[in-house]
Image (tube, one colour):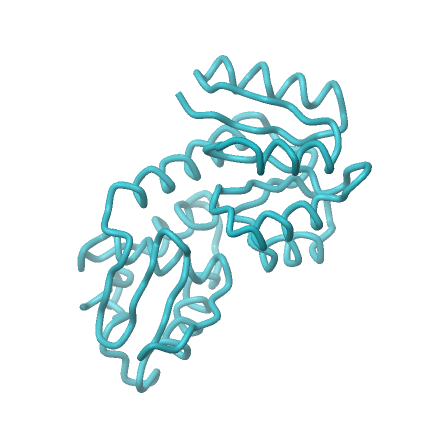
Length: 226
């Protein structure tokens, strides 16, 4: 059973989330404003935080920033308003692990919650430090270094790197990566994966135009060569 904190000021929505997450077998705590949500997040361990960005007392951005400044590694799923692309980008840059846009379908939210919990559980079961070439990945701190120097990856770039690492050299398709890292369905046609792979190569490969580690497998996808 996972322990989840929901920080949401809309009582009806908070109740609905709590009820449905409990039906799924989770233990759920609710905070109705940002200040109390941050206090509860820092006072006790949680496996996941569902965080609305528009909150009284302290908005979700400030809550998220404070959590990451305290080195809290708990996965955070943010709830954003429809069409507010800048909110999504800002939330991800502050350390959110994923987002759902309001109004959202319950099945979509539950799927995102399960994916984040599963990813977090997998990370906890493997060695906290992994290496390939001159790259070192610290899963417990979500940190990546290259030849001892910190590499600034966006949350999705980091998640994509972890998804490749988890395959242990096996090929993973673009469809699987879009589903695992971004939560997109197989029907979505997107160059998102290719764009993020290019950025990973730029930041991690000695020669991005001739990658040694993040390799393209023609008509199949990508794999990570240690």
